Amino acid sequence: MIRVLKPHADKRSAERFVCAFRASDPKIERKVVMEKTVMNVKGMTCNHCVQTIKGALGAVPGVQQVDVLLEKGEVTVAYEESKARPAQFKEAVEEAGYEVA
Ligand SMILES: [Cu+2]
Image 1 (cartoon, rainbow, N blue to C red):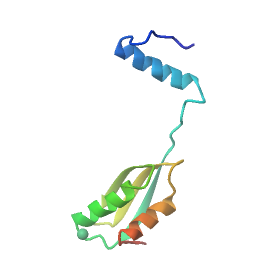
Image 2 (image 1 turned 30 degrees about the vertical axis):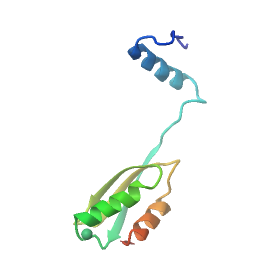
Image 3 (image 1 turned 90 degrees about the vertical axis):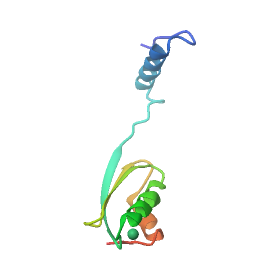
């Protein structure tokens, strides 16, 4: 049941209202499915490389988080399943000048 609030009702109840409304209407609710993928990237030698990789992957729409283990050459990308595909990550890394193993 949706509670109708008067406009400019106190901020806290207004926020609750929005949440309840979203949850009760499937047309408005957007289910976010998070996915994670791990890539082995060759050629990363220093923190500058790490930042370059993070920047390149972070620019792909739908990417939420990028973690880089420099010593292992391991890159973990957390992304919204509906917005990004792992093939885009490989492309972004290669465009930045690194090789995906
Ligand atoms: Cu470097």
